[in-house]
Length: 364
Image 1: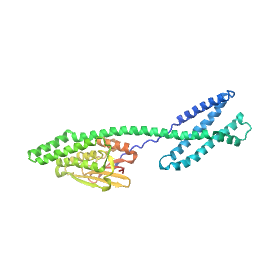
Image 2 (image 1 turned 45 degrees about the vertical axis):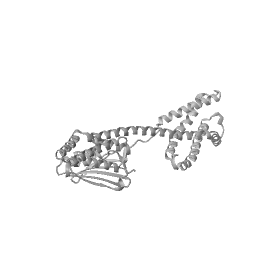
Image 3 (image 1 turned 90 degrees about the vertical axis):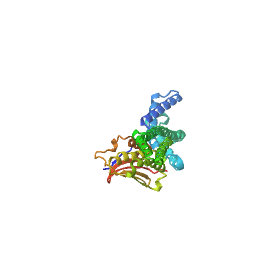
Image 4 (image 1 turned 45 degrees about the horizontal axis):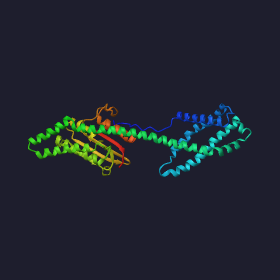
């Protein structure tokens, strides 16, 4: 049965309602004190505060609707004129709703200056008097929400950049660890020594050159987070040249790389740990195993990569979510950070062996 890892999706940005209530309560207190001083402290402060509190808390209750409009019709890019067409009439409607509440509340509680005045007249007078101020409030809410969202997005990108950098270092160290493992270097150099003793110096020199090229390629990629699939395939071929010289004709590498996948950008060292696992946990564990099939295909907007080996099958209790391998764990984490839930990795028994599949967005 196929085991598929679910990648975490990113969190949505939002404004905490507690901060909104605190903000509008503060505005109510400031507005109350200002009017209290303007009226020469003739009207009790508490009466003014009740009216102002009701007015500004209504703005607070209405703010989420304004924020929704700001997110749904975001004024940016090539569509800003279309979004402005929504915001201009919506801002006037919002002002009218808030002014009507102000007028109705003032009429209902019987504020002295509006006593005996029809509700419609109160609304008209307040609409004209407060339009400019309320228009500024509407657009201040929109601009502040954009500024807050931008700040959160910036912090999120900074955090992701730090995480990606750390994961890149881990991938580099894992690649170097694979190449510099004592048994790997010992076996490679032992093969070279054997070739020298057999007077096959050209083959020995070629093998040392391949090892040098592999190490050089790894060091040259030290700052890259993504490379083209073509570069990754070239790196894999260098690695497999050494492995094939160690295993002789036993390892039969089959390449099935679609031409249109070569420019695709993938995380650096994405396939290398998978191929390494296929050799050391697959082909080397079974004498009759010899097939290593590496495939890349474009399926709509998705790039699918797969590595198959005809070594031993996975145990019945295998669970990818609890893998302890450094290479696979690193791949899963980087896919999650780079593509969220748009990418994934699965391992399953296929035919006489095991197939690892990676799918991610096709990007060039």
